[in-house]
Length: 225
Image 1: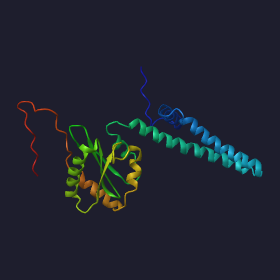
Image 2: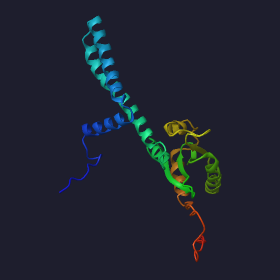
Image 3: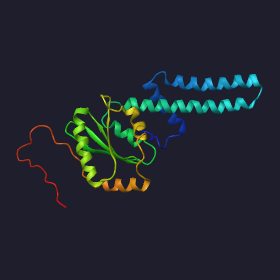
Image 4: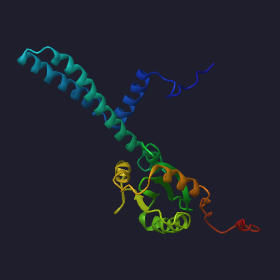
């Protein structure tokens, strides 16, 4: 029988590190040599200091700090590799947003148009953040429309709009998390959950099909409450 692919969650720590190392190598062939050089350079520095001062605990400190430096550089390169793999992929901004640590409530694709431009909604301490994917000339109208929708439910909550992308005035996905983290903290933790629950009642804006409607097709009517 064919073996099932291993689930990353059930893999051992060593196997996970090897898998991430392969991803780093594909994104940047010089990535792993940089990790090794940073760790080895730190170790050599402490060994030299130990030889000069004659204080042997510096050797132990050098080993521990070398491992720490190597892991930090390894994590940074792994994050960059992830960004490079997601670059240009539909839904890349949503993947980055869902990987944020902290009290962030992310709802992907709250609005999608027929050109497959997307708007995601994030609720956090700053308030409500609408993040778009697509050309600026097209997504601006979507952001304005979505902003009006959320303000009907959250009147006194600050609403920010962010265009993710590589165009003029847009935020690259590699800097998206940092951009949101720099926004002012306007809400407290209970308010974040309360507002997010209220916004979940909003229906999604589904894309209209391109081209003429087929004969006999009727536009769906919104249900009245």
